[in-house]
Amino acid sequence: MNQTGTSASKDRAKVCSRLAPFGTTIFAEMSALALETKSVNLGQGFPEDPGPELLRQVAIEAIQEGDNQYPPGPGVPQLLEAVAAHQEAEYGLVYDPATEVLATAGATEAVAAAVLGLCEPGDEVLMLEPSYDSYGAVVAMAGAIRVPVRLSYDGDRWVLPAGALAAAATGRSRLLLLNSPHNPTGKVLSRAELEEVADVCRRHDLIAVTDEVYEHLVYDGRRHVPLATLEGMRERTVTVSSAGKSFSVTGWKVGWACASPELLAGVRAAKQFLTYVTPAPLQRAAAAGLRATHELVGPLVDELQSNRDLLAKGLAAVGFPVRAAEGTYFLTVDISEMTNEDAATFCRQLPHRCGVVAVPCSVFYADPAAGSHLVRFSFCKLRSSIEEAVERLGRLGAGGQW
Image (cartoon, rainbow, N blue to C red; front, side, top):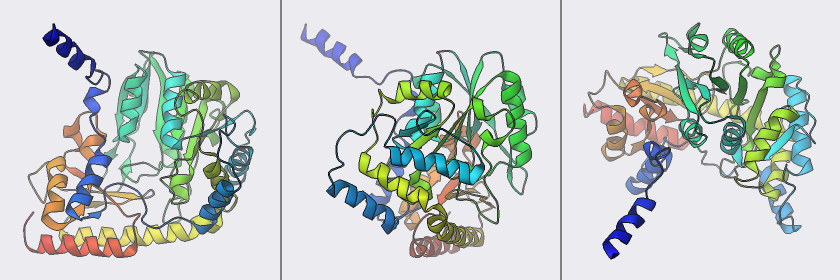
């Protein structure tokens, strides 16, 4: 009897089959390894500075003023109005803050709520690959089917192959999950690529969910173009972003979704049973950040671009073929000319070899073998950390220890 009961208990404790393949997120694993080995953490994409004083001060004042209870479910009015004003000022997109903007626990929850609230089991969800690791997991949670559309590298930049998205769409396709600027590659979709995406969405009647958290972090004079600004896309797009990346407060998890009332109803239906609400003081602070976007983001972009160039130069000097980043926190390198190890093994050994942590891009592919030669490094760190990482990598490379 006891043996039977114990066995049944163990069965109940198993991770459900939908999520078992995803395991522990790579970011938690590699950040823990960075702490264990006292390595420079160029794996997980979080800044090392404390974030803008403006946002921190507004958050502190909100807490001291007693704004510590449940806020309104859709979000505090200051944030909803600031998001709507930002979208109109930056992109000419007009949203009603009362009915077309929703505060979320970061962009991750916004994407999850959109997929959970707008997809039926068996629906197909198209996404660019490599894809951020939470996308496949949330599609699985929804009982939907992940359909990867693989980016390629033309020797100069990452590209969305012409016709690839159209070829992947079927009568079962329901939703397109688009990430641009793109994590992990650092790619920013060109206008021509976005036009092709929009054409596929219109022809196949797809809902688009766009993860645009790096919207302001684009380099070399580029400008982000939201998919919702293209013809016929405003009413079929859920536009997602957050304060975390634009204002260097990734731990706050304050995000938002903008969409027509009909689409936002699906997002809200799921979100209310996930985190219910987003912390009120941090929403007020994020609103202050949005009202000062250019004042805060301009210097950040300059700093990140400089860090990107320093890290790219250091990696190239060691011998890594670097794939240039057009935006985001990240650049990727091809390790196949340096080692016979796959990316996962290489990244788990790198901290012990030289005290630097990176992330294997294999975790961003449905078939890990497709990314087994690629490694992602983040450059959203203090300048001193980038310099230290470059110096450590250089010593190891010079010693021929790859």
